[in-house]
Image (cartoon, rainbow, N blue to C red; front, top):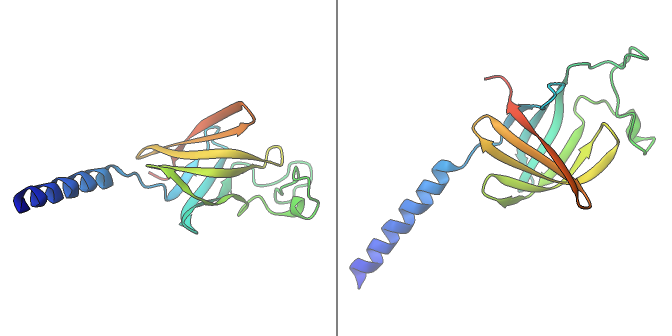
Length: 144
């Protein structure tokens, strides 16, 4: 009986070790599919956080001033700088290499139900939904 128990423990340890080895790292800087922004993702609050770290066009072409969150419907938030803008915060894990929660879209000033999934060492799938309409894009790891 104890040898069966010991064998079961060894098998479980091997399975747990194998799944941990396949876990992908989400931490880092990711380039959006369009290549117009880089988002820094870190672990925070039991989940992940993502902030805009770089923009291809960091200045508003109309004013020459640093780009702001001008499409945000809240006038106080519309003055925030795009660099450092939080897109999601404390997004909790919802499966292996996957987190689900809310994501902010600075292109239209709206927040959407979203998921972020690491699909490879240098590939991240970001999806968002409004009701039954869903869309997404693939981000690539920057700086490798």
